[in-house]
Length: 330
Image (cartoon, rainbow, N blue to C red):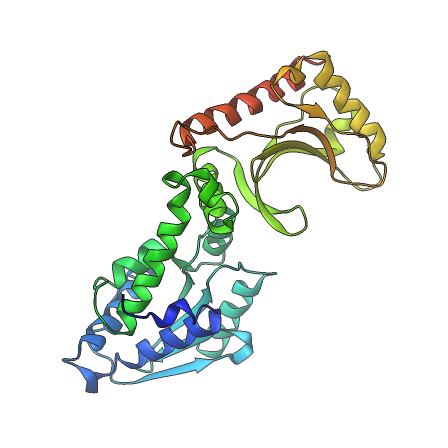
């Protein structure tokens, strides 16, 4: 197999450099070159998605990098700006997208401005929501593959498309590999979390357990007339093959009191008859209180491939059972 530069150039700076290089190929002087066609396809794909317009030719283009901490933006034909925020695996932080957009809008008041969020890794639901609210178009891995159509080309664009396709294959490997082949593979776990995120309403992916990504869903806890109604959040969390139910008390709430309270609810309603589940000891100093642990949630078929449908049903059963505990406690 032909070596692929993007197997080594995996950073966001490398991705930025690739797109800046490709945008340069949109210039009118390169008409007739295949890279000119790909570059114009990228520009017009973004413009059509954001403003419903296209450019027929690029007489002028200027690529500006790292101005006001913006990854890069392209000034096209002295009337159009495309602002790029480029990510591989990381996510946005603070209100960076809105700040970047406002900066460009103030600097180029007479330009048509489009903002695009490129993500060659998984774009999570909370990420999409934030990006949409900042009025950016998400150019995710599926969208990228629709721009870079010629996967088999032996050029830089073909290499980039193959790298994106390879990432997708690895993310989706949880659905076909034997579990003993992917259980320690963080990328396969992320693909599985992405599947759950899209199958179970109200769920998402966050950072728990020492900074590792985990899948979670908030549980509705406004179940009866109590001061606790407004003092805690409850989450069902998946950390690799383990499911836990965690309570997150608000500031100044007694953690021990909170855990005892929820333990009483669980025990009164026979939640603990779920196979393998156990109550966790009270930890006075831990504000994220782990109440229940179910150590092995994964179901594998005879070929040791996980059964995603059955696992999803099992998780939904746990959520419903816990909600019933809350709703029936008086």
